[in-house]
Length: 259
Length: 365
Ligand SMILES: Cc1ncc(C[n+]2csc(CCOP(=O)(O)OP(=O)(O)O)c2C)c(N)n1
Ligand code: SF4
Ligand SMILES: [Mg+2]
Image (cartoon, rainbow over all chains, first blue to last red; front, top):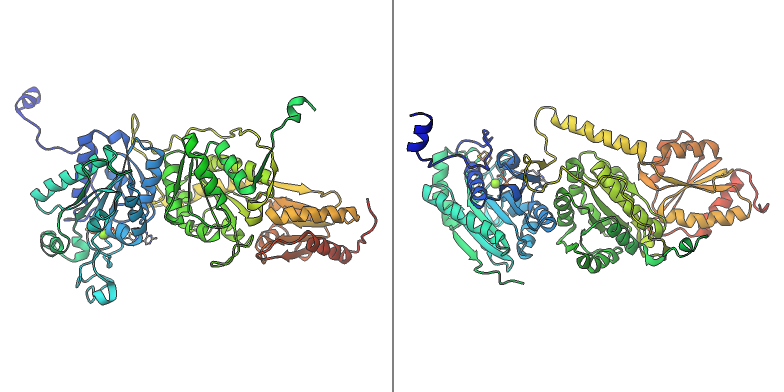
């Protein structure tokens, strides 16, 4: 089938989202950053907001967001993306503003900025990629590293008496009045990916309806630094990670009831 | 005098408030900050005056957040300002380095207090090195302006916004507790922009154009070196075009004082006293600390018998004066860390130096 005939008798069921740039990413095989990128791009397309979106990239494996997502992007210092996004949103309240942050970025060095952005009800959306390690710097221990997990700086496994417990950000941020939406998703099965898309759309909607701060935590993989094959990494997310970091919606504001 | 010029409007205000008036006159509608003495008048003024004119005042959770609010608003193409004092300015150094690397304009005001550490709230010029050499990582420069009057708190703030935009770089106002708290009349001259207001590089959403970004990461082959040379050329251009200084009573001055800010202001009084006694003393006052008026300092040193550097620290600009000239043997220093030198102290030192170079007081002009 060629040309006209092809158009007439076929239906497009799957294609690259318009907002996803057609280049090869630098992500390792089995890394879920790429899936989260795709969901992000699809959501931008879904709401038709590509030309009014400003993203804020963090410091981590996802710093090259601006090479992959076809929108304006500012690069923030490590952990400061919510503060940079605040500066953008305050200057341009009519634009759609999101951050995309790793767990070292958001849950360690940037804890202050994320908590206060949420608490102010800053009308931005945060995509938070929790892979229980510092991917970019070579797999060191993160605040989200599981107890017993061996990393390059916890070679005997994380031990709570020394390093405390893995921090649950989706739950923590849900406790703040300014948070309109907080959910934790995973992307290890087609069903989970569908749910993740729903969550991201909900989070986008919160901002579009000016309901306040929204965050979606992704349980992600880092096969490279976990020392696992991609499939084993999937199993880890589905198993021990989901057990400790339960998936679900922790907060969902029904109406803009805050002042 | 025409009637109009006789009616020039004057305002009586604190230096800190004059900064705010200057910023608003220059079109700044965004201010972010975190409380710290002795500059709280600035956020207080901005929190009262920005919202009614459609501006944005936001108190941040820290100076780390503050400088990144600035980064985001600057990346959006808006004029934006913050103010703080030593401890807070220290926390902003990371952000300043990122803004310099990302080529983002903003105005940062340091109403400095004494340090190091928590130090004290006494006035000080101990942040000279941090301001002029730049305390963040990677090697960058910023225009640094040092007002010595409430009038200059107003006008140099307006200039700082233009310099920031001209060079797409943060610009810093270095004041201190005295110049910030001092009240005196000033003339709020109208703001006349000297730079184009368009910012085609701003992140405003990619409607009708390809996406663009604001960043400081350059990982590809050679990119970061090229970027560094590009930034360097801007700093060189600043050195060629932005040197500002005031020669004060330099006619026949065998004793040349070099001082900035409050120390320069006090020196003027002492110079007037000494001149009345016939002592040949004048001052070269750097207004821009970066770029430093090196050539002018060298010329003044060549023609003088002694050069007296006066600072409210233990000798920081002193190093730049030494670097500007070969006449090291002529350089003397009067330092008052964490306090304002009194006109009497400076007058005393001028007399002592006059004796040293063999000039006697008494033969009034
Ligand atoms: C102030 C500062 N400290 C440390 C670093 C080094 N650094 C770069 S990325 C990173 C951690 C990244 O981990 P994460 O946020 O979890 O992102 P991932 O790479 O895992 O996606 C660190 C510590 C830095 N760039 N800046
Ligand atoms: S190091 Fe880990 S997080 Fe980074 S791209 Fe590779 S798999 Fe992904
Ligand atoms: Mg990580």
